[in-house]
Every structure is written in C-alpha cells, then in structure tokens.
Image 1 (cartoon, rainbow, N blue to C red):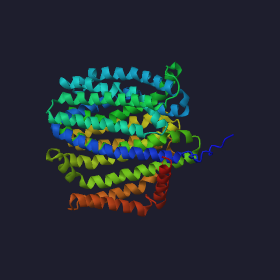
Image 2 (cartoon, rainbow, N blue to C red):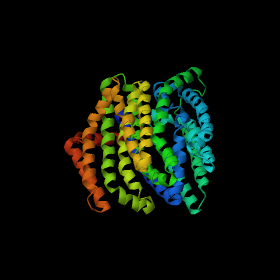
Image 3 (cartoon, rainbow, N blue to C red):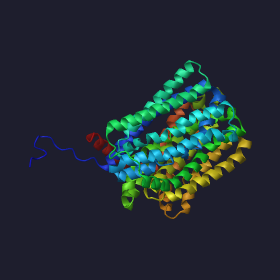
Image 4 (cartoon, rainbow, N blue to C red):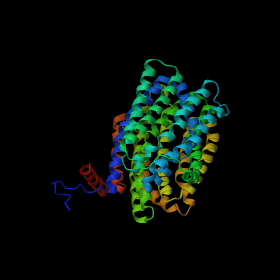
Length: 493
C-alpha cells in the first residue's frame, strides 16, 4: 500500500475542537468589530435623519413585532443545531422539516400582529407599516434555517460575511433615503428588502458549500418532536419578547414617541454589544452538546465561556457609563442628550444578557430546556409591573431600571431555585464577582471627574484592566492559552 506521505507532503493534523472554537469565535469577533462600525454609523444616520418623533415610531414598530418573535421560528434554531450536530446525515430533511413547521406559525404571527396592533395604540399608518415590517421580522427567518449548518460545521465565517452584507445594504439604504429626504414608510420597506437579500444570500451560500447532507423531504415524526422540544423555548421567547421590548411598547402608549426616541438610541447602543455572547456560544454550542454527558469538559467549556463573556461585558460597563453624556452629544447631537442617563443605566442590563446566553446554551445542551420558561416568565411579569409603576413617574428612566432588574431576574437569579441548574448559575456568579466589583468602582470613581471625554475613556479602560489583572479575573495563563490557540489556529488555516 502506498504511503500517504509518498508524495513528500506531510498530512495536516486534524484541527482540535478548541482551535475550531477559537477560529470561529475570532471570525465572529472580527465580523462583529466591523459590524459595530456599520451598526453605529446606521444608528447615528437614522437618528439624525428621522429625528426624535419618527425614531420613536420606528422603535415602537419593531419593539411591538418583537413581542411576536417567538412565532417567527418557533424557537427551532437551537433544536436544529443540536439535532443536526448529532445526525449530520439527515441535515437536509431536518432543515426542510423545521422550515415548514416554523412557517405555519410565522405566517400566523404576520397576520396577527397588524390585526391586534390597535389594542396597543398602533393606529392609522403605523398599523399598516407593522404589516410590511412583519414580513422581514416574522415570515423570512424560517427560510434561513439551513444556514445553521455553518454553526454545526464550525464555519461561522459564512454567517459573518452574510451578516455584514445585510448591514452594508441597510447602511447604504439609509444613506440613500436620507439623501433623498424619503418619507418614513420607505425606511420600513427598505429594511424589509434587506431581509429578502439576506435570505437569498443564505440559501445561495448553503447550496454552494455542499455541507448539507441527505435529501430534502418532510419528516412528520421529526416535526412532532421539534414542536415538543420547542414549546418550552417558545414560552421562554414569548416572555423574553415581553421583557425585552414591552418597555418600548409601553413608552409609546404611556409617554409618546417623543419620549421614546432617546430611549431607542440607548437601547441600540447597548445592544451593539449583545451579539458578542451569541458569537462565542454559537461557536461553542456544538462542543457543549457533544460534551454534555461528561461533566469535566462540559464545566471547563462553560467556565471559560463565563470568564470571557463577563470580563468583557463589565469592561463595557466600566468604559461606557462614565462617558455617556459627552459621547451622546458628540455623536447624536443635543436633541438626543436625554439618552445619556438612560444609557448609564441600560448598559448594566448587558451583564445578565451575557450571563444568560452562556447559561441558556448550557441548559439546552444538557437537555434541561423545560426549565427555560420559568425565568423568562418571572422576568416578564416583573418588567411589566415595574414599567407600570415607574414609567408614569420617571418616564424612560423608570423603564431603564425596570429593564435592568427584570433582566437580572430572568437571566440569572431565578434559576437558583432549580437544583439541576443551580451549579451552572453558581459557577457563573463566582466568575462574575470581581469583574462586577471592579466595574462599579471604576464607574462611580470616574463619572464625577471633570476630565475630557477621550482621557476619561482611556483611564476607565486602564483602571478596569489593571483591576481585573490584580484580582485574577484576567490571568497570565489566559493570555498564554489565547496566544497558543491563535498560533494553532493559524497553522491549521
């Protein structure tokens, strides 16, 4: 038998799981860095183009549709990722089944949303704009399910490029709309067209990649299984949609779109960070699913996820909060200066989001998704009650505090009541202690100082990094491991 090395070329060693995770996370982070620039540019341009009133209406439309987000995909994405990672030879049939199953609910949601809109104060043109926006927000997502294969095969750079394509298209659309002084409804139409382009890019890329195995046919028994597995996540998503977006709907109805406009900007700025935990966990989720039966590697992956995410999110809190006011005035103008105190509060809501993304991925990987709805339901109830109490008295600032408190309950603390999940929560809380304390100290120390914007930002970053290093939140071994993984990643490219 001829040696595989007979031609003088050495066979490349298989890429390790840790290296694959790093490569995909690095690709996601690089894409997210570019995406941040596009998102920030679009946010600023859209705010200056629309003004406070129209921007409030824009946020109210998509905030309302987010309440129906659970119908867009019936929460089958993670179920499909788990099943396809285990049964790759049936990937085509699983994706086809999942798409048709989810479409039943997404079409229903797209009809229900505009029909029920007047109950939430959306009348006249806003109601019909909701119908147009629902095509992008609710009907299109199931058609992109096959793109999950890039997550399963740890080739997430495909998703990164497609995501950047959508952001570039949306930025270009907003620029043309602003230059042409277009009417408001064209903003909604343009965003919907960007959604069609994104789905087309996903389908074309999946077909060209050849990664999906098997034949495309419907599996009735798999549809029933997906529905059974998805129901707990649907309740979670429904409750999550309430505590993530009901604040904008309630501000629209109780305080008006003039008050909602600055709040939309604060939400957009904080959510610029939200894709980071999704980037890491989408890379790591297949590894978590495969290692779930073995507690040692599973705990190791989860601990490193917590460490990375929580150090980063509290760094964002420490840097953003002290410079919120001058930053908002510089970028968005004085008309949006009321955004600054809202941003100082809302940036802390990212901590339970980062924590919750890691925790929910671990819960699903362990097959414990039956517990997922409880925290979200508790968070939704607390959010609605707090908004009812705080918005009439404090307006958008009250909604900001309601968001932070309800996110903390839903994403972290409520799960301490469940013995099977409590060890995962406790692990994350132990990791979070020092980064949280350092971020608080930096924030309260720097906010009153009369330093220039740039110097205060630099001082916050240095102070946080130093504190994280001294307390062990950042360790030398982390830098060594990162450098080693980076070198291995390059050698396997």
